[in-house]
Image (cartoon, rainbow, N blue to C red; front, side):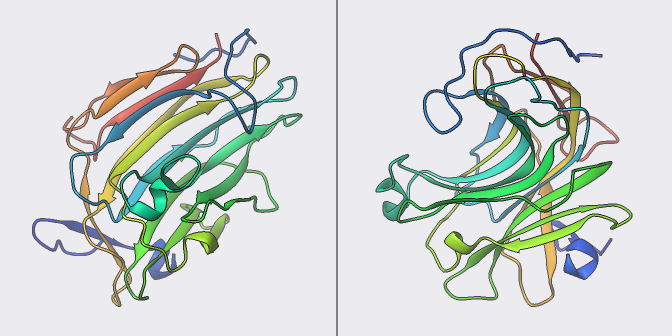
Amino acid sequence: MHTSRTPALAFCVALCWLALGGTSSAQYACGMRTAGRHCYAVTEWSEHPEYFGAYSDIPQLGLSCAGCDGFVDNEIWMIDDFTPECQRNPFRQCWVEAGYLADIGQNLPYLFWADFAPGGQFRIAFPAYAAISLNHFMIVKDGRTSPASFLVFIYNTSHSTLFSALSPTSSGNPMKANRIVMGQELTGTMGATAPATTFTRNIWAVVPLGPEYVFWYQPQRTRGFERQDTPPWERWTRPPGTPGTEGGELTTHCCR
């Protein structure tokens, strides 16, 4: 932990590198994996002109899609709705996302990141190992390059899991994230399960990553705009501002 840069706090990026749950299946209508209306249980913030990074601690608990026809995940997103190059994309926005996901036929979730950059190219990458334990998920705009790119870090406290990536289709693009979203995404019509999972230490970067390689941040201070498509479900078990938390504690679950 580093001393604060008023009014922001900071921590070194990846060591300077770096009760509700339902488990039975249910029927739902959440589109196809690559098309249609997906379902969400999320909260989002759009209170600042630009967010330079997003971070959350999310434990890896029993997501399963062994008998499903879509996927279920827990993740964080950084989204740009306004940059002209992003509005010309088919989805009329750009994003970078990171989390863990159970896809068709998977009993265990896998870590992933994905992006949709100006020009419309979509990429998704999976590390070659299953997600375990408590992982820390970070996306940050890299101000050391011009034009800027985005870095993704996924790691656990012991660093037995340590994964980083340069978001290739986001490298050198004009994306300026005006929203941070976190929570659960669901596709398909049946079979996905996800026990109650908490999102804690919900913070955002107030400046891009600089030469000191430090994530200067503020905790989320409001509940944001909440959405749950039932399924999946979300609720603030400890709202932002609760003493003893940084950014509160959000809980998601699916699918009963």
